[in-house]
Length: 318
Length: 318
Image (tube, rainbow over all chains, first blue to last red; front, side, top):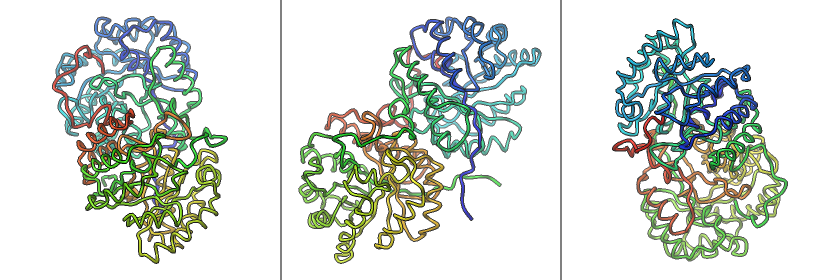
C-alpha cells in the first residue's frame, strides 16, 4: 500500500511582526510606519494578524502607541482575524476598548523564563490571568492562551510534556479553547513537536492548537512539517523574519512569513496569501525599518522563479 | 492507537565540503589547507567523506591537486568511507590510481542543467559514463550514481518523477545500486521528497538512496525529515555550509553538517559525530578559508547550550 504524508489542505498563517517583530526593535517605530506596514501586510492575503501588545508602556515602550495603531487601522482590516497580546486585565480592557475582538494571553512553561520575562512565577502569571478570563467571559470576547518556551527553555532546557499538560489543563479550566505552543528560542525538534501534539491532542481533544516556531536552529520548517502531520492548521510567522532571539544576538528569530508561505504553497497547501506580495512586503518592511531582514525568499526567491541561462563563470559548479 | 513518526535509529552523514565546498570557492585553496581541513573533519567522528573531484584541471582548477590531496591523507582516514567524484573514465582511473576505492558518477536530471553544467545532454552524459561502469566492474571498485537537480531545475522547473525513474533505471542497468538524489539548487519540498522516494523505492526496491539537500529555500531539514520517514539513512552535508548556490549569489547552498547533525542528535538519531567537534571544525574552516560560514550552529549554537541568566535589557521580550 502506498505511503503518503497526511497534511491539511488549508492552513491559516497569523502574521505576528506588528507585535513580536516591532517589540524586538529597540528604537521606537513611528506610528505612521507601523500603520504603513500593517496596511502592506493586510494587502498580502493574510487572514490572521497579531496587531500589537497592550503591555504597560514602561515595559515595552516600542508599543506604547497600541491604542492609536488599533483605532486607526482596525476598520480597514475586513476579513482579517485581528488579535492583540494582553498581559493583564488592564491590557485586556485597553485592547477591547480600542476595538480588538480577540485577545491572546501568555505565560511561560518554566519559572526561570517566566521570572526573566514577566518577573513572576508561572503560578503567579496564572493568577494574574484569572481576571482576564472573567472579563472576556463577561464581555463575550474571544480569547486564546499562549505558552512560551513550550518545548525548551534557554535556562532549564527540555520542557517535559507533563508540564504542558498541566498548563493546558489550567487554560482549559478557564474555558480557553485555543492554545498557542511557542518555541520562543527555537529549541524544538520535529519528533518532539509530533509527540507533544500527540499527547496534548489525546488529553485535550476539544482544544485547537496553534504553533509559533522560531528558526533559531534552522528547524522551524521541519517542525512545521511535523505539526502539519498532526493536523495543526494554525501557524504564526513574521514578515522578513522580524523578531530576533534575545538569548543569541544576531541569531534568527521568528520563522519568516514568506518562507513558511513558500513551503506551504509548494506543497499545495492553501493559505490565501500571495507569495510575491509577501516577498514585496518583506522588502518594503526591510527598507522602511532599515533592518537586514532574514528570510530565504529575500536571498534566493521562490523555487518557481526560473533562470533564463546559467550565470557566467559558474559552469561546472554542481 | 498512538501515532508516531517512524524514523531510522542510525544515519550516515557524508561530509562533502572538500568537494562541493572547495570547488565553489573561486580562489585556489592551498593543498596544505585542504589537508588540514580534511584532518579536522576526520576528527569529528564522520564516517563518510567526499574527498575531491577528479575532473580536468581546466574545468575546476580549484581541485587540480586532487591526486596530491588523496595520496597524502587517504591512509589517515581509517574507518571513513572515502569517495571521489569522477566525470569520466580518465577521472576514474586517476581516482583509483590515487587510492580512492569508491567512485561517484554524476549527471543532471534535465538537459538544460546538464548542458550548462557539463556541456552535454543527459543522454550524452549517460554514454560518457558507460566506460566508467565497465572500468569499475573490471577493477571491482565500489560505485554510486548521482542525479543533479533531481527535484527541480533552475531552468526547467519541477522535474517529473517519471524522469527520475528513467534515469535510475539506466543506472540500475549499469549495476549501480546506490543513487544520490541531489537537490542541487534547493527546489525540493518535503511532500515531493516523500512521494518521490515512495515511487523510486517501489520501482527499484533493491537500490539504496542517499539525499543531497541544499538549503537555498530553508527546506533542507524539512526535506531530511521527509526522507527519514521513508527510511533513508544516507545524507550529504557540508561543514559550515560551504558550497554556495550558483544561480543565486549570496544564497545558501549545501545544508551545513553541524545543523544536520544537531537535528539528528536532538531526535536521538545516532550519526557517530561529535556535535561540539563539528561546530569547532566549522569555526576553524571559516577562519582558515576566510569565509563567513553559513549555519545556525555558528550563529546560535546547539539547543543544549543553556544560559545562566537572562541577557540584560532583554526583559519582557518574548
